[in-house]
Image 1 (cartoon, helix red, strand yellow):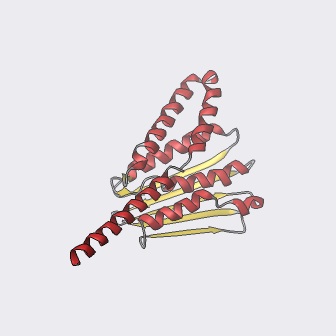
Image 2 (tube, rainbow, N blue to C red):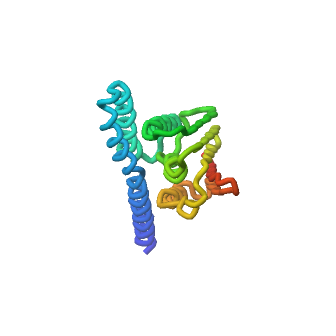
Image 3 (cartoon, helix red, strand yellow):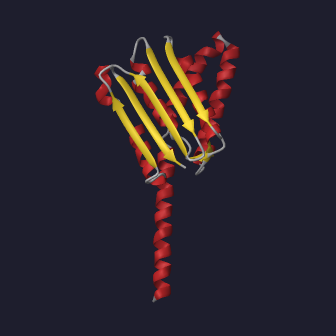
Length: 209
């Protein structure tokens, strides 16, 4: 009877783990496919205008797609790889706009080899561009600060937005992020989201390693 009970408990735990892994894979698969399609369309028009620049951006896009498809399915990646992914994303976004935007990405990391869950930060960065930069005709900005030690990672991003769009500023992506954090960083994360009267939207995520 005891042996049967132990077997049943192990089976339940295995099924629970399999369900969690399946849910994580599903959530990861929802990360930014529309961005890749939009960027490819922009690159198509750039090829004839500036071949050298188009080639450079195609390489960045290729690196991003490879990372999303392969590295993004891993349980853990290095902080260095996530930083490179974000840098490529922002470089490609700059190409898309025919207006002045201000982007800052400040990184202070003791050791970039620390391991984190992949494709977490990109959801917040995408949100800033989609609901901030893309909706504003001028003076759009995105400020990102990342600080990491061997004990924690602190990621903060803020952007301005059109106050009339405030009701739609949190979408599927952030709900996706919250679910993934609950699955992997239960009791080891703190997510803070706020806006102010100056139409500035801020997200701060702190992970305990």
